[in-house]
Length: 188
Length: 188
Image (tube, rainbow over all chains, first blue to last red):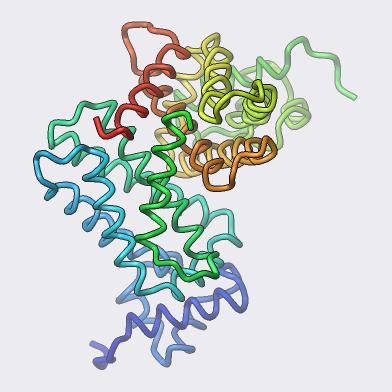
């Protein structure tokens, strides 16, 4: 058993992201991350399966939030409104971690494997949302398309939020992007 | 210089897909593919960079078709209609290769790395379409969302087409999926 380390996970995450930003993801070792965080490799592996997991462990709670929000929408809500509520809730969660999100995005953008990993995580989120819509009685095709539309809106709003200089908040950008999607699909 | 081999590329592609289906992608070697096709490894590498490329070389011509169709839509066409024409054209192209497409999809579904690769290719197609829309004067956000919506429709219609027993054709399934997307984003 190791010593109890206050906020070891957060320290490791911060150290990893610093090193990935400075040297690149591939050039960074777990030993270096642990050292930067003032912890041992053993402690690292108690928190993360590998150095890639540091960037992706948050997807689980994001999925829980998305699925939970869709599931708890009123029965009368149209599928797109249930999904809108879910992606706005996810946006509000991320809003508090903008610097982290921006730094993480830059690391991912620099590495094709990480980009591929990110895309598959987003595809999983869409599948999970579609599954929840089906449980609410939404037909198969409508469920898939609503979920995909929601994730596309989320991703595009995310890019704007990360790159924005105007500091509009993420949930607001999500609402704007969804309105735009509604306009373009209506042929405007 | 090797001998001239009639339709070497097609024979290699067919042999590769057979072996990937029988043994799995990872368990298949380039030597085995060449042998099955009655060709040499040297000939294989004249046509494909590696065994993964056999599954993805078609993305280039698909992108050309999508981009070309969007670019040549009438000036008066709404962005979503330009994209609809493009994905229908792509659907018509693939329609002629349904057995191939189905077999390829099964190989990809069995391997996470190939799935990731497929997702990044689809993301590239969306980027290329969005870029073409921007050149047509469509605003940035509308361009991105229309392109993403188009690729989502394409992908979901593709899944239905591959799994369908009713033999509806791919362009028709694309039109139905797009209509459904229009309905769900309108809150129906």
